[in-house]
Length: 192
Picture 1 (cartoon, rainbow, N blue to C red):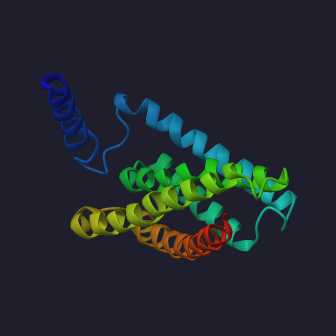
Picture 2: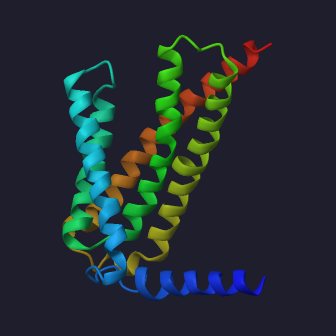
């Protein structure tokens, strides 16, 4: 128990003293992993955007292009400026729903729409979406409100990105969530 409390204290100190102390401070040596994470994210969004354009509109319409473009711009800005890192990572956590989305597509393509795997995946996607794309974004907006004095110190472009990107993505996530909710209700109503 004492080891867990010591770890918790160290993690809180790291967040408080290094990652949240001043959002305008450029990268420190602690952030090598963070830079790699952002580079992977940029690569993912570029690749996925290229696939969307290549197979347009079968992999998604303009809403996916908007989602990926906003995400790409925000991550690139954070990488190049060092500003808004906390908000970038909070929004990137929402991508934890991607495996469920992709698995749904694979199960559907394989003709397994009536399988228990499809049902379980749908329920997992619903829960993950609710937590990572709805509740988390509400927390992001609350955090922006609490730390508005720090956000005002950002460059104008970063300042506007801090409000624009989460707002647009939250509206899109809410619309998609309503479709997921409708699908879960429909599937559970038909399930034996």
